[in-house]
Amino acid sequence: MVSATGTDTRSRRTRGTRPAAAMVTVLGLVATAAACGGGPASGGGGSTVVFAVAADPGTLSPTTALATTALSMNTFAYDTLVHVAADGTVVPGVAEKWSATATSARFTIRPGVTCEDGSPLTADDVAAEYNHIADPENQSPMLGLSVPVTAAAKADRATRTVTVTTTRPAPFIVEMTRMLPLLCRKSLAAPAALARATNASGPYRLTEAVPGDHYTYVRRDGYTWGPRGSTGKDLPGKVVFKVVPNESTAANLLMSGQIHGAVINGADQDRLDAAKVRNRSFEALFGQLLFNQAAGRPGADPAVRRALVSVLDLKELRNVATGGKGEPATAIGETVPTPCTGDTVTGNLPAHDPERAAAALTAAGWTKDAGTWTKAGKPLTVGLSYATNQGPQVASAVELAVQRWTSFGVRATAKPIGSSSISGTLAGGDWDLAWAPIGVTLPDQLTQFYDGPPPPKGNNFGSLTNPDYRRLAALAAARPGVDGCALWEAADAALVKNVDIVPFAARPIRYYAKGITFEVDGSGVIPSTLRRGDGR
Image (tube, rainbow, N blue to C red; front, top):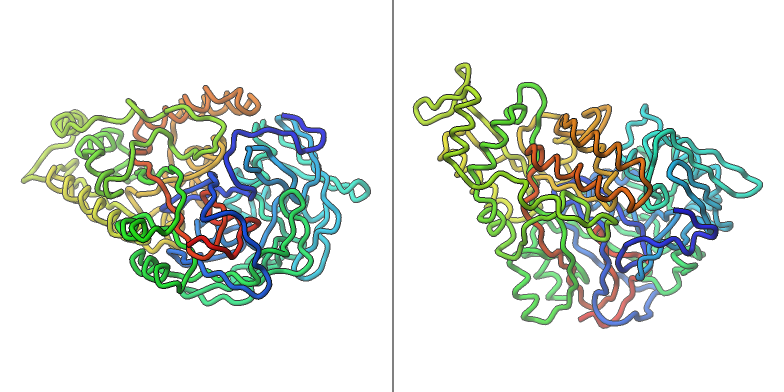
């Protein structure tokens, strides 16, 4: 995994040239890119583009933001060291060249890059950000996603280089940098100040933030360091992200020309398609249940986990959640274009069998008393948490699961949560079971979610302890790039077999647009490709 210039390093990626983002939210999406609308069209200047977003982003601080909306919006304001081209090549961004091994990387920082306040973005700044995220005291959720857990960085001003070393293998150390929003060093002194502001290193700066309503970004003058040296001269002068929680409302606004783009995944797709509003789509993990296995939680009992899943008809649940447009999941969160593409789900989940579920609970010491499963005098009680911005179909699927469990003898309830609060809920630990797919581009990025310490010291939200996953992931991490894929896939399968997670639904994610053209990946619109034009 070595490149002398940084321009020839191949990566099994798909279209688009923007940093991908890893995230954990109700909808974890990463990485595919597709043309949306017609061919590229000029139209920068004072033009304005308005996108609907399903939820308020919460904090926009780049070292702490983890919600889908925040990650998408931050790509307009912050650049990264590398990007991914349409043919899958890793191409220069702020780094003009690089070289790497499994435990180190050296990046040469392009001259002339500036932050919003006019200060230059230097190798010292990049090294400082690496070390800030790598410091456990800062509790950045980006540790393990954009920065290896054991990373240490040093800058050389004379050569404009940053050298990153790790004490443990980081098999995708270059690819990870696509998820590192670059900050000038002064912003690291008070990262919380960027919760509703920017000190942008990318093509846009945030000029207005009205939480729950809209966020306005204005194009920066003098931006010349985009993917392959692209500039901002043809980008729209202003981009507005309008918070529209209801998909039907977003579709109405799109049809009437009041907004230019929106992600529509529910029943409103039919009328947009009938009106010939253009879209492109990609498959992404959509339905996944995550158990909280902390002491005292029902999910700590493997018999309970298996029983709760066996009671459900996962095909029925998938059809309700996706309106019949979903497919069985084949991965636990690595979304195309991940380098490891094997099916780790099929055949590894418990089959629909309520009788076997009852037998498993009985064998584990549970008894059914007056129609309710109990143990040591306590009823089996479970709450299913989900983010409300996923729309009415997911809400219906959650209610269906609750009904099936209730009929089986479980005291089950639905727990709706605002989208910007779902990560906080998981980190807080007061939940039993969550509808929470986690989307990443690289398999090693999942380890922090399914192994290691729980919050606040880590991101193992479900307090999982799976020895097979830990062992196989460690073996995989010692092999660079795709050489470790077979082991990564075996590690993923171990989580599914143990019913630590239940990935059961994938579906196409559709970006609809009128009056603009752009390309997308799983975290949103690729800023460098956005143009005003006839996207209908």
